[in-house]
Length: 638
Image (cartoon, rainbow, N blue to C red; front, side, top):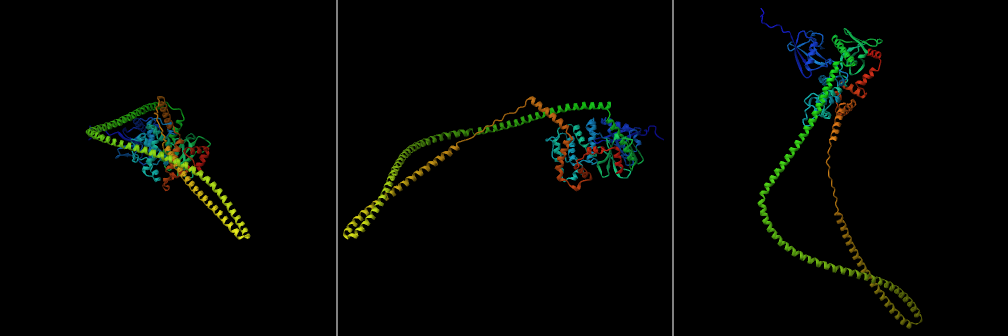
């Protein structure tokens, strides 16, 4: 028999909901619907943009499903965990916006999208090129650690976290330190931003990835060709079985009127009534239900975005704008306070440094004073020794004075001798000049005597001739005449020899005089050269430089502050072209380290896409250029 005090049967429904940064546990009533649980989660985390999200779970057949809002939680085949005692759900983004910067309003919405997209990139559910992975990792680091601070940053600080997809690190022969250095370079380049601004920059880059916001499902067409169906925020994409990056064709939601399925057959009725239905096949009824659910939700959001905002959204945007302005004011105040604090810390550091310097000077002065006191007695002793030395010095000075007088007298004597010698040199020069004149006269006389000698020789030859003639006439008379002629010739020869000797002596004396003059000129030249060198060495150059202090006025400081704010706004409005240029630079830096054999199929397809100059938006624009009928026919022929 049951006790009247026994407890009733437990009618609560234990639920655990996991987000990317928290876990929530609730106790629901057994009749609670999925909508009630979803609203409870949104209220708990403060989320108002709830139309993007849903509760995902694994059912009893091990299929991933989305919780239906109109059905009871316990009636949806949710697999129980922890000994069949608790229902476990995951709070994920089910639908994605077309443009994150224009559509996402709340910070919590941005944060949840940031966490989910980051996890999808790291788990390689969304393919991301290596250079874009490094750029996104730098923003993720900025979110985690705040703006770069060289004082707090330490090498190896980023090595502990998961920042890059494994497919990226395996594709390049680079150490973790090399990857960290690349991420740090981009991290340092970011301007100081709040967490929501950094997360928005992350999402703006991530939304340009080809697989962002795409839910893929395996399908076939009427030819049984295996394809991928991609359900996105703007429409349906058809992909080749081996290429999830580049769609083969696409259909926007404004071209689609109705979506339905019958067992494995999926039918899409288009707005253009002249175009036949778009039909494909799936191998699983569960997949068809998910496709239909996603198509309905994305279509509703697509049409909703193209209508005026509701009062709720207008109110949310106004509140978000006010909150953003308030944060900007607080941020400016914080930056100003931070600058003042840094200035005060710098001044305190300078004062402490100056105090240490003064203390060092005081310590040195104290040491010097102590040393002076220690040497005070030595100075007295030295003064006595100095007096004795002064007396000795006076004696030496007297001796030196006497010696100087003696040297001065000797110098005067030398000067007199020098004067006498110069006089003798002048007399010798005058004598040499006279000898030169006399020599010239003697040379003239010598020439005259030579001429006379020639005349004498000619007279001798004539006398000899006459003598011979006379001999023919008489021998006695000839003998007397011959003796007389010989005596005269001999006298003439002796006179000529004396004149030649005098001329030779004069030439020798003239040569000696010229040698003395040449030596004297060389000595004077040497003295002049020495004087010129001494004159050059006496010159000097002196340059002075006086630096001037540069002081900014208040107006200049205000102008610089405004310029910094404008630069910050320009940085936040950085265009996609600038981002692409940054990515191209990083791609060229890491290209030498690539291991070609480690490339995946998506890496090869992405490289081909880059070489062709195509991207996500250009491909979709090109596909939409054709008519709807032509795209349907193209799909059927695949």
